[in-house]
Image 1 (cartoon, rainbow, N blue to C red):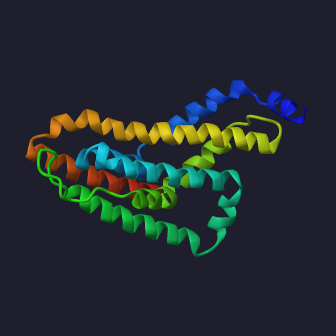
Image 2 (tube, rainbow, N blue to C red; image 1 turned 135 degrees about the vertical axis):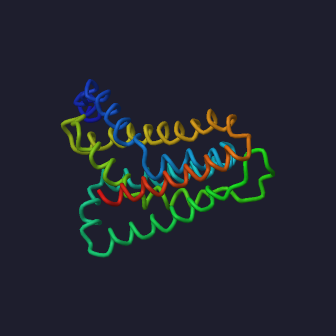
Length: 206
């Protein structure tokens, strides 16, 4: 009976607005989404699948921590925010270098694609993810009961994390066929690597 009462307290009409807000805020270009597109273009979608899984897992870790109310307490610790920024910046610079120097799609692929562990690291340390998820999480009230409200939001936003990040990687599949030419491929890799660095700098600045 208690579960039925809790379920009936959910305002399902508020869910579409939450999903649209998440698409606009969480789906906007940032370190994780641009890195997925850049990785897909540089290494191919199939070889980037493990990196995608890592980014999704790391971002969901952030989502759960936001839902648990740990964000404010964690980031209030003096050393935590700078540590997140340093770790994210260091990995993104490393990733940008490997994307910029990746061989053209038409060439043999000996260079290793980004790993699941690398995606997990970026997902957790991505400064935009913390800000964006926190903003979306408080943007709507789905249920009167706090635990139910948090649970529904976590489930809905976890789904959006998968859709958004996979969508950015799949976008690379549309772009890749036009980059078989080595010159165009090199220019695209360098341009996406630069965009990754710029998006990270913008996220850190906020």
